[in-house]
Image (cartoon, rainbow, N blue to C red; front, side, top):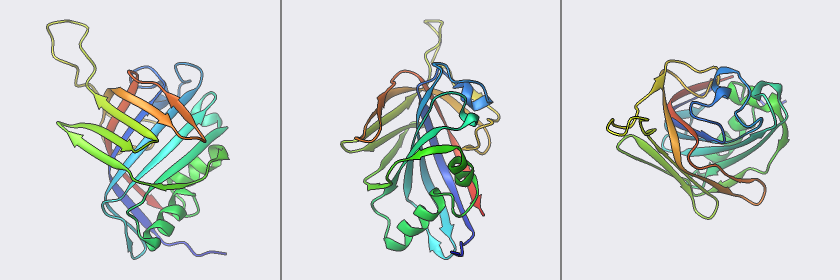
Length: 206
């Protein structure tokens, strides 16, 4: 049996999906369209797996499920940062596979179809508090504040204090996507102008 190390990662996270604003999946409800297609991107400010440092690396989850998130039947793919050296890559693979416990082990239990993990260039840019994630040739995601229904009012800066989906630590900002376009050969979708949430994460295991 493989011995796993303790690990912790914290930093910025953005979730963008096919649901209406705020995404009912965040509260344990069924997705807006009866299914959910989502991209979740983590920018690790500080992280380690045992003695292996993970600071500055990014990872992306590609998620599809046909009904309530907690009913399972997920399809799950992962992009890992191509800047990772071999030790960091092995550490990230161990964490996201669920072998080292924590959130990713829970997600593994919900997953029916695991797509191949890919090592790619992941650009996670933040300008004026809004995120844009690019994986050349595969993925574009961007966030913006939701326009006010009152024409003379500024865009909304809404937030929720907690979410049942445990990607986030602390308050979660409610946004919408300027673009959400995934063109991976194994899983593809496009849902621009719909739900996005941004905030901080602090995950650990086992």
